[in-house]
Length: 178
Image (cartoon, rainbow, N blue to C red):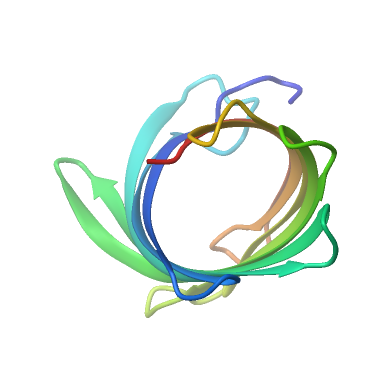
């Protein structure tokens, strides 16, 4: 926002394995396209592809019939495009806490807080990668398709360790469940 610029476009696919009523394990892959540089005022930009195999756990706690808390723990293996090939950059651990309130069977409100931590030999000054918090609305078309509109604040540490980006972002997501 201000100036408006698409920063990311990603396609994420996950296989979910239901362990019990509240616990789900996931394994997946993300195709992540990012517009660089991060400076939204830059006149020159380019796109960089990143490939991310991932795995994680999701634990959902029902507070009552309409309110739930979800804890999401996951790990990403980050491979960055470099000319015509990819190189392994680092591991990243993510934890997200989401509070969801169902207004109806089709509409839900949610708020979340998420932290990202980097691990690997090339990580020197930025073990803390980023923090995101935000809120949004889900609209469930049917049991297979869901639309999300989110606002979130993204606070990210750069690799130097002493430069930070603070962004206000709107995200539109179409979820398809098979």
